[in-house]
Amino acid sequence: MAFPLHRYRRLRRSESLRRMVRETTVEPSDFIAPLFVVPGTGVRQPVPSMPGVDRFSPELAAAEAKELAARGVLSVILFGIPDAKDAVGTSSADPEGPVCRAVRLIKEKSPDTVVMTDVCLCEYTDHGHCGMLKGHEVDNDPTLPVLAAEALAHARAGADVVAPSDMMDGRVRAIRDALDANGFQDVALLSYAAKYSSGFYGPFRDAAESAPSFGDRRAYQMDPANVREAVKEVLSDVEEGADMVMVKPALSYLDVVRATKEATNVPVATYNVSGEYAMVKAAAERGWIDGPRVTLEILTSMKRAGADLILTYHAKEAAEWLGR
Image (cartoon, rainbow, N blue to C red):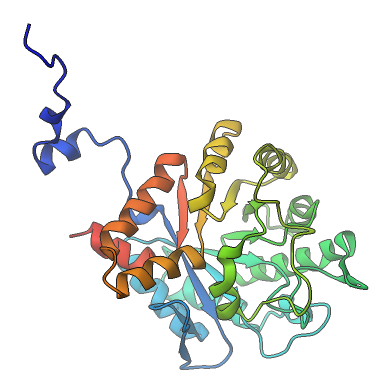
Protein backbone atom coordinates (compact mmCIF):
# COMPACT_ATOMS: atom_id res chain seq x y z
CA MET A 1 0.00 0.00 0.00
CA ALA A 2 1.35 3.39 -0.98
CA PHE A 3 2.20 5.80 1.80
CA PRO A 4 0.69 8.18 2.69
CA LEU A 5 -2.75 6.62 2.19
CA HIS A 6 -4.58 9.94 2.49
CA ARG A 7 -3.32 12.70 0.21
CA TYR A 8 -5.35 15.74 1.16
CA ARG A 9 -3.44 17.91 -1.27
CA ARG A 10 -5.24 16.22 -4.17
CA LEU A 11 -8.24 18.49 -3.60
CA ARG A 12 -6.13 21.62 -3.12
CA ARG A 13 -4.28 21.63 -6.43
CA SER A 14 -6.33 24.30 -8.19
CA GLU A 15 -8.79 27.06 -7.37
CA SER A 16 -11.55 25.11 -9.09
CA LEU A 17 -10.91 22.06 -6.91
CA ARG A 18 -10.68 24.17 -3.77
CA ARG A 19 -13.93 25.94 -4.60
CA MET A 20 -15.66 22.65 -5.36
CA VAL A 21 -15.05 21.27 -1.85
CA ARG A 22 -15.19 24.55 0.08
CA GLU A 23 -17.17 24.12 3.31
CA THR A 24 -17.87 27.77 4.09
CA THR A 25 -18.78 30.46 1.60
CA VAL A 26 -19.20 34.20 2.07
CA GLU A 27 -21.51 36.19 -0.19
CA PRO A 28 -22.30 39.93 -0.37
CA SER A 29 -25.86 39.10 0.69
CA ASP A 30 -24.43 37.92 4.04
CA PHE A 31 -23.39 41.50 4.86
CA ILE A 32 -25.21 44.28 6.68
CA ALA A 33 -23.57 47.64 5.93
CA PRO A 34 -23.59 50.26 8.71
CA LEU A 35 -24.44 53.81 7.65
CA PHE A 36 -23.98 56.85 9.89
CA VAL A 37 -26.64 59.45 9.14
CA VAL A 38 -26.43 63.16 10.00
CA PRO A 39 -28.86 66.06 9.51
CA GLY A 40 -28.77 68.27 6.45
CA THR A 41 -28.38 67.84 2.71
CA GLY A 42 -25.27 67.17 0.68
CA VAL A 43 -23.25 66.26 3.76
CA ARG A 44 -20.48 63.67 3.54
CA GLN A 45 -18.00 63.61 6.42
CA PRO A 46 -15.07 61.17 6.53
CA VAL A 47 -14.52 59.41 9.87
CA PRO A 48 -10.79 59.90 10.63
CA SER A 49 -10.38 56.73 12.71
CA MET A 50 -12.18 54.57 10.12
CA PRO A 51 -10.61 55.04 6.68
CA GLY A 52 -13.18 54.56 3.94
CA VAL A 53 -16.17 55.21 6.23
CA ASP A 54 -18.21 58.42 5.94
CA ARG A 55 -21.15 60.03 7.68
CA PHE A 56 -23.94 60.86 5.24
CA SER A 57 -26.94 63.16 5.12
CA PRO A 58 -30.13 61.16 4.43
CA GLU A 59 -30.25 61.53 0.65
CA LEU A 60 -26.59 60.51 0.32
CA ALA A 61 -27.24 57.55 2.62
CA ALA A 62 -29.98 56.51 0.19
CA ALA A 63 -27.57 56.79 -2.73
CA GLU A 64 -25.03 54.70 -0.82
CA ALA A 65 -27.64 52.04 -0.06
CA LYS A 66 -28.53 51.87 -3.75
CA GLU A 67 -24.88 51.43 -4.70
CA LEU A 68 -24.47 48.71 -2.06
CA ALA A 69 -27.51 46.89 -3.43
CA ALA A 70 -25.99 47.01 -6.92
CA ARG A 71 -22.99 45.15 -5.47
CA GLY A 72 -25.19 42.54 -3.82
CA VAL A 73 -25.24 44.01 -0.29
CA LEU A 74 -28.97 44.06 0.34
CA SER A 75 -29.04 45.15 3.98
CA VAL A 76 -28.03 48.36 5.76
CA ILE A 77 -28.31 49.46 9.38
CA LEU A 78 -28.67 53.14 10.24
CA PHE A 79 -27.09 55.01 13.15
CA GLY A 80 -28.28 58.57 13.68
CA ILE A 81 -26.36 61.62 14.88
CA PRO A 82 -28.89 64.36 15.74
CA ASP A 83 -28.57 68.13 15.83
CA ALA A 84 -29.57 68.32 19.49
CA LYS A 85 -29.02 66.04 22.47
CA ASP A 86 -30.52 66.11 25.96
CA ALA A 87 -30.54 64.00 29.12
CA VAL A 88 -33.43 61.80 28.00
CA GLY A 89 -32.67 61.35 24.30
CA THR A 90 -35.78 63.17 23.10
CA SER A 91 -34.59 63.34 19.49
CA SER A 92 -34.34 59.55 19.23
CA ALA A 93 -38.05 59.36 18.29
CA ASP A 94 -38.12 62.43 16.03
CA PRO A 95 -40.01 61.47 12.84
CA GLU A 96 -38.02 64.13 10.98
CA GLY A 97 -34.69 63.09 12.46
CA PRO A 98 -31.89 61.85 10.22
CA VAL A 99 -32.66 58.14 10.69
CA CYS A 100 -36.37 58.42 9.86
CA ARG A 101 -35.63 60.64 6.87
CA ALA A 102 -33.01 58.18 5.63
CA VAL A 103 -35.35 55.22 6.05
CA ARG A 104 -37.98 56.85 3.86
CA LEU A 105 -35.48 57.86 1.19
CA ILE A 106 -33.78 54.46 1.06
CA LYS A 107 -37.12 52.68 0.69
CA GLU A 108 -37.94 55.09 -2.14
CA LYS A 109 -34.60 54.97 -3.96
CA SER A 110 -33.58 51.36 -3.27
CA PRO A 111 -36.74 49.36 -2.55
CA ASP A 112 -34.95 46.00 -2.51
CA THR A 113 -32.73 47.10 0.38
CA VAL A 114 -33.59 45.71 3.81
CA VAL A 115 -33.46 48.76 6.08
CA MET A 116 -32.49 48.11 9.69
CA THR A 117 -32.21 50.75 12.38
CA ASP A 118 -30.12 50.77 15.52
CA VAL A 119 -32.30 51.45 18.57
CA CYS A 120 -30.33 52.97 21.43
CA LEU A 121 -30.04 56.28 23.25
CA CYS A 122 -26.27 56.75 23.38
CA GLU A 123 -26.21 58.87 20.20
CA TYR A 124 -29.09 61.02 21.47
CA THR A 125 -28.23 61.71 25.12
CA ASP A 126 -25.91 64.50 26.21
CA HIS A 127 -24.28 62.12 28.70
CA GLY A 128 -23.65 59.37 26.11
CA HIS A 129 -25.13 56.50 28.09
CA CYS A 130 -27.66 54.10 26.61
CA GLY A 131 -30.55 54.86 28.93
CA MET A 132 -32.17 57.20 31.44
CA LEU A 133 -30.03 58.20 34.39
CA LYS A 134 -30.78 58.06 38.07
CA GLY A 135 -27.86 59.93 39.55
CA HIS A 136 -24.84 58.36 37.89
CA GLU A 137 -26.54 55.01 37.26
CA VAL A 138 -28.48 53.97 34.16
CA ASP A 139 -32.07 53.33 35.23
CA ASN A 140 -33.30 50.25 33.37
CA ASP A 141 -37.10 50.26 33.56
CA PRO A 142 -37.81 53.95 32.76
CA THR A 143 -35.61 53.52 29.67
CA LEU A 144 -37.82 50.83 28.11
CA PRO A 145 -40.71 53.06 26.92
CA VAL A 146 -38.23 55.54 25.42
CA LEU A 147 -36.58 52.77 23.42
CA ALA A 148 -39.99 51.50 22.36
CA ALA A 149 -40.93 55.00 21.15
CA GLU A 150 -37.71 55.18 19.12
CA ALA A 151 -38.35 51.79 17.53
CA LEU A 152 -41.93 52.78 16.77
CA ALA A 153 -40.79 55.97 15.03
CA HIS A 154 -38.44 53.93 12.85
CA ALA A 155 -41.21 51.45 12.02
CA ARG A 156 -43.56 54.28 11.04
CA ALA A 157 -40.86 55.62 8.71
CA GLY A 158 -40.74 52.23 6.97
CA ALA A 159 -37.93 50.29 8.66
CA ASP A 160 -37.98 46.57 7.94
CA VAL A 161 -36.02 45.63 11.06
CA VAL A 162 -35.36 47.40 14.35
CA ALA A 163 -32.24 46.44 16.29
CA PRO A 164 -32.02 47.38 19.99
CA SER A 165 -28.40 47.63 21.09
CA ASP A 166 -28.80 49.25 24.52
CA MET A 167 -28.60 46.07 26.67
CA MET A 168 -31.43 47.06 28.99
CA ASP A 169 -33.17 44.05 30.50
CA GLY A 170 -36.63 43.51 29.04
CA ARG A 171 -36.29 45.88 26.12
CA VAL A 172 -37.06 43.25 23.48
CA ARG A 173 -40.48 42.55 25.02
CA ALA A 174 -41.19 46.26 25.46
CA ILE A 175 -40.36 47.02 21.82
CA ARG A 176 -42.22 43.97 20.48
CA ASP A 177 -45.32 44.89 22.45
CA ALA A 178 -45.22 48.50 21.22
CA LEU A 179 -44.79 47.45 17.59
CA ASP A 180 -47.60 44.90 17.75
CA ALA A 181 -49.97 47.26 19.56
CA ASN A 182 -49.51 49.85 16.80
CA GLY A 183 -50.01 47.55 13.83
CA PHE A 184 -46.36 46.78 13.06
CA GLN A 185 -46.49 43.04 13.64
CA ASP A 186 -44.47 42.48 10.45
CA VAL A 187 -41.51 44.62 11.49
CA ALA A 188 -38.75 42.23 12.52
CA LEU A 189 -36.56 42.60 15.58
CA LEU A 190 -32.82 41.93 15.58
CA SER A 191 -31.57 42.00 19.15
CA TYR A 192 -28.00 42.81 20.11
CA ALA A 193 -28.45 39.93 22.54
CA ALA A 194 -24.83 39.41 23.57
CA LYS A 195 -23.16 42.80 23.48
CA TYR A 196 -19.93 42.96 25.42
CA SER A 197 -18.30 45.88 27.17
CA SER A 198 -15.39 46.02 24.77
CA GLY A 199 -12.34 48.10 23.99
CA PHE A 200 -12.97 47.52 20.29
CA TYR A 201 -15.67 50.21 20.04
CA GLY A 202 -13.46 53.31 20.12
CA PRO A 203 -13.71 54.40 16.46
CA PHE A 204 -17.49 53.93 16.48
CA ARG A 205 -17.82 56.38 19.35
CA ASP A 206 -15.84 58.84 17.25
CA ALA A 207 -18.17 58.31 14.29
CA ALA A 208 -21.42 58.39 16.29
CA GLU A 209 -20.35 61.00 18.85
CA SER A 210 -21.53 58.63 21.56
CA ALA A 211 -18.69 58.32 24.09
CA PRO A 212 -19.98 58.42 27.69
CA SER A 213 -19.27 61.72 29.43
CA PHE A 214 -18.50 59.83 32.65
CA GLY A 215 -17.82 56.25 33.66
CA ASP A 216 -18.29 53.39 31.24
CA ARG A 217 -20.91 50.82 30.22
CA ARG A 218 -19.72 47.80 32.17
CA ALA A 219 -22.76 47.86 34.45
CA TYR A 220 -25.09 47.00 31.55
CA GLN A 221 -22.95 45.58 28.75
CA MET A 222 -21.56 42.07 29.19
CA ASP A 223 -18.31 41.03 30.86
CA PRO A 224 -15.91 39.78 28.14
CA ALA A 225 -15.06 36.76 30.29
CA ASN A 226 -18.56 35.22 30.12
CA VAL A 227 -20.00 32.79 27.58
CA ARG A 228 -22.77 30.99 29.48
CA GLU A 229 -24.28 34.35 30.37
CA ALA A 230 -24.36 35.22 26.66
CA VAL A 231 -26.41 32.12 25.94
CA LYS A 232 -28.84 33.12 28.71
CA GLU A 233 -29.17 36.59 27.19
CA VAL A 234 -29.80 35.12 23.74
CA LEU A 235 -32.45 32.69 24.93
CA SER A 236 -34.19 35.39 26.96
CA ASP A 237 -34.35 37.72 23.97
CA VAL A 238 -35.73 34.98 21.72
CA GLU A 239 -38.37 34.22 24.34
CA GLU A 240 -39.28 37.92 24.46
CA GLY A 241 -39.81 38.04 20.70
CA ALA A 242 -36.48 38.57 18.94
CA ASP A 243 -36.54 37.27 15.36
CA MET A 244 -32.75 37.38 15.07
CA VAL A 245 -29.92 37.78 17.57
CA MET A 246 -26.48 39.34 17.40
CA VAL A 247 -23.12 38.85 19.07
CA LYS A 248 -20.93 41.96 19.35
CA PRO A 249 -17.95 42.21 18.85
CA ALA A 250 -17.11 39.40 16.43
CA LEU A 251 -13.43 38.58 16.06
CA SER A 252 -12.53 37.94 19.70
CA TYR A 253 -15.94 36.37 20.38
CA LEU A 254 -16.21 33.64 17.74
CA ASP A 255 -16.70 31.08 20.51
CA VAL A 256 -19.77 33.05 21.59
CA VAL A 257 -21.04 33.06 18.00
CA ARG A 258 -20.69 29.28 17.94
CA ALA A 259 -22.38 28.86 21.32
CA THR A 260 -25.23 31.10 20.17
CA LYS A 261 -25.65 29.15 16.95
CA GLU A 262 -25.86 25.88 18.87
CA ALA A 263 -28.27 27.25 21.49
CA THR A 264 -30.95 28.70 19.22
CA ASN A 265 -32.62 28.19 15.86
CA VAL A 266 -33.08 31.84 14.86
CA PRO A 267 -30.70 33.62 12.45
CA VAL A 268 -27.46 34.70 14.12
CA ALA A 269 -25.64 37.92 13.25
CA THR A 270 -22.29 39.16 14.43
CA TYR A 271 -20.86 42.67 14.39
CA ASN A 272 -17.39 43.12 12.88
CA VAL A 273 -16.91 46.26 14.94
CA SER A 274 -15.06 49.51 14.31
CA GLY A 275 -11.89 48.63 16.21
CA GLU A 276 -11.53 45.37 14.30
CA TYR A 277 -11.99 47.27 11.05
CA ALA A 278 -9.57 50.05 12.00
CA MET A 279 -6.80 47.63 12.99
CA VAL A 280 -6.93 45.88 9.62
CA LYS A 281 -6.96 49.21 7.78
CA ALA A 282 -4.03 50.58 9.78
CA ALA A 283 -1.89 47.48 9.24
CA ALA A 284 -2.76 47.35 5.54
CA GLU A 285 -1.89 51.03 5.05
CA ARG A 286 1.57 50.31 6.48
CA GLY A 287 2.07 47.34 4.19
CA TRP A 288 2.22 44.91 7.10
CA ILE A 289 -0.63 42.73 5.81
CA ASP A 290 -2.50 42.07 2.58
CA GLY A 291 -5.68 44.00 3.42
CA PRO A 292 -8.18 42.31 1.08
CA ARG A 293 -6.88 38.82 1.83
CA VAL A 294 -6.94 39.32 5.60
CA THR A 295 -10.36 40.96 5.47
CA LEU A 296 -11.94 38.07 3.57
CA GLU A 297 -10.22 35.58 5.88
CA ILE A 298 -11.67 37.35 8.91
CA LEU A 299 -15.17 37.48 7.42
CA THR A 300 -14.94 33.79 6.52
CA SER A 301 -13.99 32.97 10.11
CA MET A 302 -17.18 34.65 11.32
CA LYS A 303 -19.31 32.70 8.88
CA ARG A 304 -17.46 29.48 9.77
CA ALA A 305 -18.14 30.09 13.47
CA GLY A 306 -21.87 30.13 12.74
CA ALA A 307 -22.88 33.66 11.76
CA ASP A 308 -25.65 33.84 9.19
CA LEU A 309 -25.22 37.61 8.83
CA ILE A 310 -22.19 39.84 9.32
CA LEU A 311 -22.54 43.51 10.12
CA THR A 312 -19.31 44.95 8.74
CA TYR A 313 -17.76 48.23 7.60
CA HIS A 314 -15.95 46.17 4.97
CA ALA A 315 -19.26 45.34 3.23
CA LYS A 316 -18.81 47.49 0.13
CA GLU A 317 -15.20 46.65 -0.59
CA ALA A 318 -15.57 42.98 0.38
CA ALA A 319 -18.48 42.64 -2.05
CA GLU A 320 -16.22 44.03 -4.79
CA TRP A 321 -13.41 41.63 -3.91
CA LEU A 322 -15.77 38.64 -3.85
CA GLY A 323 -17.05 39.59 -7.29
CA ARG A 324 -13.67 39.51 -8.96
